[in-house]
Image (cartoon, rainbow, N blue to C red; front, side, top):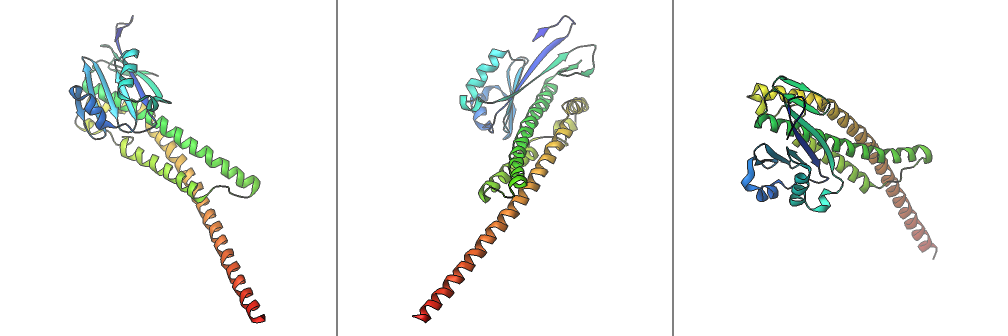
Length: 266
């Protein structure tokens, strides 16, 4: 927390996304004395006055008003080193400004009133934005791999991918889509906003700022393209397997005929 020359107070938020889901139950055991609210999917902590952490089971942890060294210390304490490799990161800030009711810029939201509910709402939206970045990365990686095989089909007229690998692609795509559907409030506002008009307004402003809806639809469209290609691959693979089976049957019949013919000659 620091005072600026423009007479407002800045509270920094730092978000981190891990490649794997976070064991929320284990986090709750380690920080049980600091927990304010929690469920199977998320837990909200208060470390001290105006210092919070929010952990989400879909792989995101957000720190509010922590110094950089404090963030590193908590990450090392809560998560093994191998889980911290390749983390995605994002920063945001809340500005307390008595003269600015609600004004959002590139990397900060300026408010005249900041309370615990507002802090949770900002942390939730930042977490979802970072998760969308990760899911977009996953969808683009799948699309790049799919393009390798479609280019191969175009240039060589054949598909060099096994049925098992196709099913792995399908599983990864479906799992990612399920995680998005289960964990992110993209089109439905969080339940707390239903009874609090101010939080509903904060959530709406943040959702528009982070471009959550359009980004989600873009990811959804990418997965549709991936699924359409995988479906075509499955049909080609099925046809290839059917052709092999037909040739095996034909060969067996020919062997049987030749065996019968040779037996009669002898």
